[in-house]
Amino acid sequence: MMKKIMLLLAVVMPLTLVAQDLKFGYINTQEVMLLMPEISDIEKQMAEFNAQNTKYMQDMQKELEDKMNKYEQEKATLSEAVRKVKEEDLQELYRRFQTAQQTLYAEAQTKQQTLLQPVQDKLKKAIDTVGQKNNFFMIFESEMGILYKSSKAVDVAPLVKKELGIL
Image 1 (cartoon, rainbow, N blue to C red):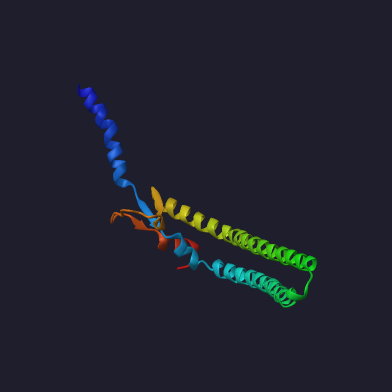
Image 2: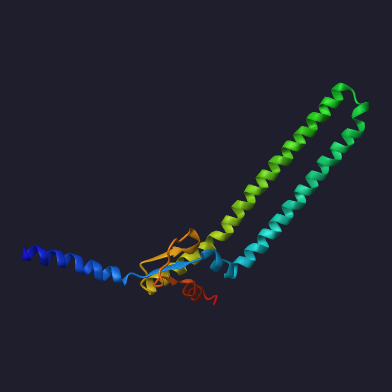
């Protein structure tokens, strides 16, 4: 009986000691990422990309509107066959406009993700380094909805900012 108690204590005691030493941290990665110097360059590149695409789409929309207005003015004087051909042309131009919109939106998302990936990787590496250097058991994303935060939980954002050199 005594051996069982000793064995139980030998197993349970280290677990309770370890549980008391666990350090948990949290960070708002979006907030930290927005402070990283690379973000302003990415914002500039995306603004240029979007400006080019906006110009292209405006030109395409103007072409569509001009052709639609011309068609509306001529419609009464056109034969049935010519009217049908012009309507089909307008429908095709509208489909191309919609496809271009969807394609450019997808390209913008892909470009943004491609530009952000190295920044996200750099931030993740800094969080890993802070976690290892400061013996954190876990670091949570604070924007993921932490329901309870103990006073022992540590906001690691200042440590990560320091690791990234953006303090």
